[in-house]
Image (tube, rainbow, N blue to C red; front, top):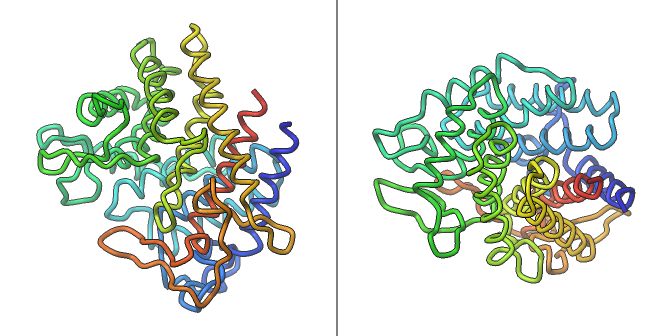
Length: 366
């Protein structure tokens, strides 16, 4: 079955390549993802900049390189990273969650694909370490000069620091902060964040994903048994509350288009990385594997096919809707990107579908 998932992941990659990948402003040696398909002129010329979507495109290219190593894809990863730096005019922006996604992608690009940007990783690591403010109630904030401390910033920054340059202690502090501050005592899911001392009670799929990723990294890298226990509890909570019929719940398009894919990525990490010390570890791994594979099968069954390549649905348990250039496009509002009128038009939705196929391939090999 792993070859089936390898083929589906390759098809998802080819769909992104054909519909979305383009040189930045026509410059040689560059590549970015056009944020919509079909695209308006402004999108084709990268007048619209979604930093964290492009970071996930790098991460997906790394997944593909792990699945099927090819020199030309290594070149693509280099071009994507270079164009990201050019379009953003540097590595840093005002959002710590954005920077954490890029840091994770760059660390994996070096470790797994042989494309190194050590100065960028160091610069981003310093951003996260210096943003740690327990005296203000954090955690690190969502963005600079902000009092919103949330899981989507602390989770991925913590995963990066656990993997990077002996920053394990800070990663553990971030995990403990999430455990003490953001876990719902009733469902055991992760709340979104805390703002000026008040809990923001929204529960998003990607918040669960990044905390699973952080706790799994720490379970593998430390002798503290608490981390594995937290993974067991959260995997069970995701199954109960965020995967009706065994399929990970969707969150539409725009930024939400990536949420389910991120959860699938880190459920796959549970399968491939959680130490197997007791029956609870095995049970968590089996549940995580089933969630990924059942979601991937549903997404594949509900895809549309355009020129022989998949177009994934924003909600994996529903048939994908065909986008058109005439439909209303995604809008940037108050630090977030809202969905296009037809969410399948958004690059985020298609990246999540590809991410899910790569996750299914990864877990099918274990």
